[in-house]
Image (cartoon, rainbow, N blue to C red; front, side, top):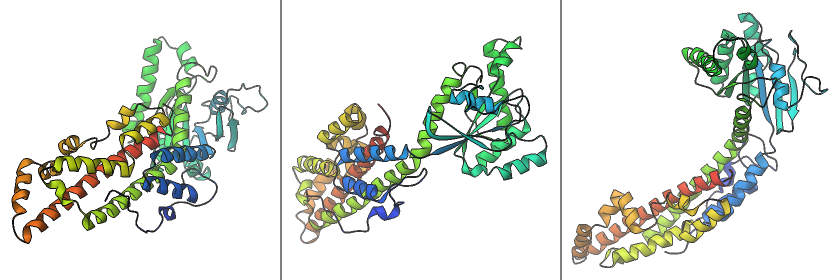
Length: 398
């Protein structure tokens, strides 16, 4: 009963993308998924931390494509240069000017955003027909994140493009450039002007059923002022999520499936050899013992959690607060079914049933099986919560 029973089954790795290289939005390589399955099956949560970090390291080398788009004359190329941290005079800068200078998509890179392609797209035309042509020709589905550039006004073209991007399930920002010019030509206070710009953009989008996007007010002439620092921070977070959300979701699903199969295996063991005396006069102590056994089997015992917290740079209490199964009293408080199964009235009833010929012992044994299976289920749910936090903590700095 106390040993971990592992049944023969189809490897979880069969459900993942195989191969030696990683691409954004995919699963995890075959050998990594096998290692993860083995670690979860054996309750080796420290190994799960190491595997998650390995996956993130692989994912960080995947390329991400950002599209800079908007109406012609809104300063898209100037924004591209500012985001890259170079001046217009630099030989590698995007061409800028008062007329339309970008006629075909141009790809740029920046050391500030490794393995990220920054696409400076041609500006949208002035007519509805040219906008439809624009959307068809540029194949927007190949981009991961859109930076929708505007200045002077947030036009109908911006709204239609935002709705198109939202319809593709892609994330986008609205970036209002030339805020320095707005500030220099208005009688309004700085705070009131910036608030009016944001509210106008948001109101226009919400009227057309577009969800609220991140809105940044910047000046391409000074990329250290206004919302530019916040924009860079948000970009880094989204680039990380674009790269890692797929493999982390695959890992999370793999962990849940492995836990479910482990629970099924252990429940079979309970049916074969259930310690029915745990519901007798000393049942509370015996159940507490088996609760510790189950926690150790899944790798969420106190010592293991302490090691995981040390490895991820967290405080162990962050993990313990996720547990309902720290002790039997806590588990009973958290689950009404277990509370009913272990209450004094039920214990008295079971003691009386022991004296009933033939039927009594069978009823007591069945009830003991139900109680242990419930404990296993609750410990497994705690394990899933701990694994979810481990995946989050091992991929983000403390």
